[in-house]
Image (cartoon, rainbow, N blue to C red; front, side, top):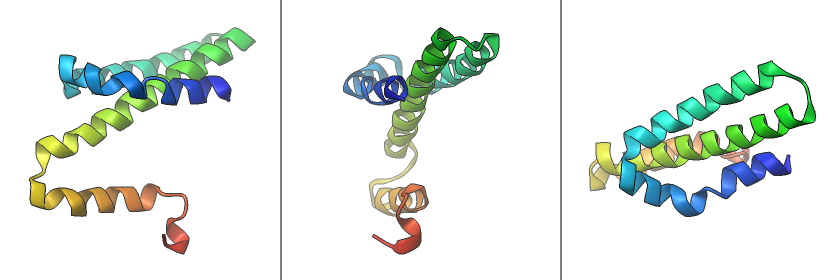
Length: 101
């Protein structure tokens, strides 16, 4: 699990810069490619190396898709809409939503 967590959180320090440099569409596409790579690597074998590589690819792909998707809010919604839209998207993804915040 540490490899997956590393894959998720380590890129956070540079994903914003990558979005600024390459654009949100390319980062989202890259995240999709990485998640596809996860499935391919995981199906190529059952060794520990396959497992580690798949977990890292999964984490980085998730990071690119999560941060890239969050960046879309500033593109597709006006300033007045952002708070409501973000709340409607964050609320169901919170592990505590059944019990309130």
